[in-house]
Length: 290
Ligand SMILES: [Zn+2]
Image 1 (cartoon, rainbow, N blue to C red):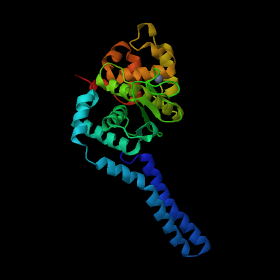
Image 2: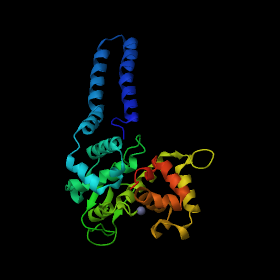
Image 3: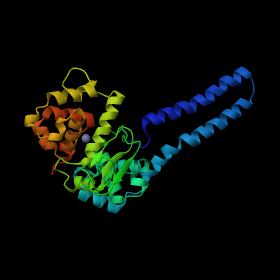
Image 4: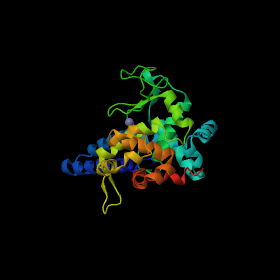
C-alpha cells in the first residue's frame, strides 16, 4: 500500500490547481478582485478537507510498531517470518495503514482483541505485498463473530459458516476459525484469506483488471480465472472439494493454498499457480522457504 495512494495524490493536485485557475478565469470575466479572495477560502477549505486522509495515513505509517505485535507475527505468521527486514518493514507499514482505515469490530461494534485485529491486518498485508498500488477491498470493514461459526441467520455458536464475503457489507468471520487459520500457517486452510480473496476477485472483475497469462495479450481477469476453472482437473486437484462449486470458490480456495502451501500448488498446478502469482504480483514460494 502507498502511504498516499497515487490516485488520491493525482486528484488532490488536480483540484488544487483547478480552483485558482477557475477563479482567474472568473476574475478576468467579471473584473472583481473579490473573486480571488473567495477562491482562496474555497482552496483552503478543500485542502483542509482533502488532506485529512493523507495526513492520517502518514501518521499511521510513522507510528511505532509495537514489539509485542512483531513477536506475535513472527510466531503466528510464516509469511512475515519469511520476509527479509525490508519486506517486514513494508509489511508492518501496511498493517498500520490497514488498521488506521479499516474497521475490525465484533458484532454491534464492540471491540476485539489486538491479536484478532492484527491477524486480520496481517492476512490483508500478505495478500497486498506484491501489489503496492492496491488498497484492501474492505470499505465496509470486518465484523468478527464469537466462536467457530455462525448460521444463516447470523446466530453465533450455531451452523457451520466460518466466514462470509457478502458483496455489500462487511466481511464476516468467526473469531476462533480466524485464529485456527493462523495456528498452522502452512496447511493451506485460512478462512480469512479465503474471504478476502472473494473481495479481491470482485474488485478485479468490477474494475476490469487485465492480466498477463500464457496467451499473447493480457486478458480480462474474469476471463482468465473462469477459463482456469473450466480447464482445472478436479479429479487430480490438491484443492478441497469446496472449490468445484464455481469460479469464485475455486479462486478463493486456490488463494488459501497459494498463500499457505505454495510449493504444493505450484508443483501440482503450475498454470494455475502462475495465474495467481500474476494476480497477486508475487511468488509466495520465495517467501515461504522454510
Ligand atoms: Zn467462499
